[in-house]
Image 1 (tube, rainbow, N blue to C red):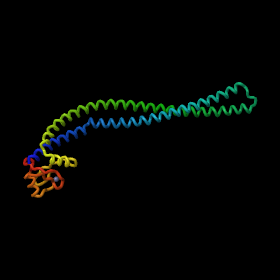
Image 2: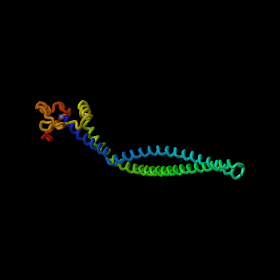
Image 3: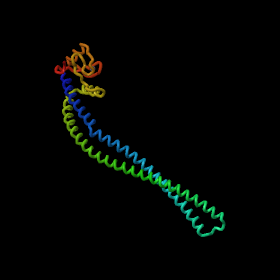
Image 4: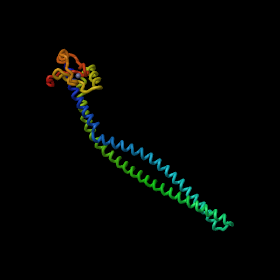
Length: 240
Ligand SMILES: [Zn+2]
């Protein structure tokens, strides 16, 4: 059957195209591109969350600073009172001194909190800057690798286009019925056509009944393997 002979040649080109497509998909530069892309997505996410954390810390810092200022103001007022000698009893002086100590204590605590927060913010900003630098480098890398990949893919695409023209030229003389059958089988297994090797289907290695073998050899109709569903094909040169 002439049609099967042509379909066999069609399949050879089709399989070659599959190889090129796979090569493109598995290319090292494509793998690298995906890796950089994932990295960038991850870093952008952590930058967003760090930015919002930094904002919160900044708000806290402002609040602490205000508290600190108001305690200092209060201290100032009391100091003025002490200096102005408005006080007439010892009790009042003692009261003022007591409050003075308490205020001083609070100031020390706020100072510690402020220092701690300041350190945290500093580390935070350093980390954000570090990530930003690495992100910038990754973006540069992406551009470089993308160029490599594009060049590589362009070469493969050129080959693919050539093969496609040849393949489709063969496909144009194959009946629609056979072509549809080929495509249907291809959707679930490849290669679609399986040569008869000895008395076996080369696709699944199942031994075929002699009547089947004869039908395949006759080549008068399309015979599918009962086991794997592939189109069986007899070709003397590939039969051993
Ligand atoms: Zn089979």
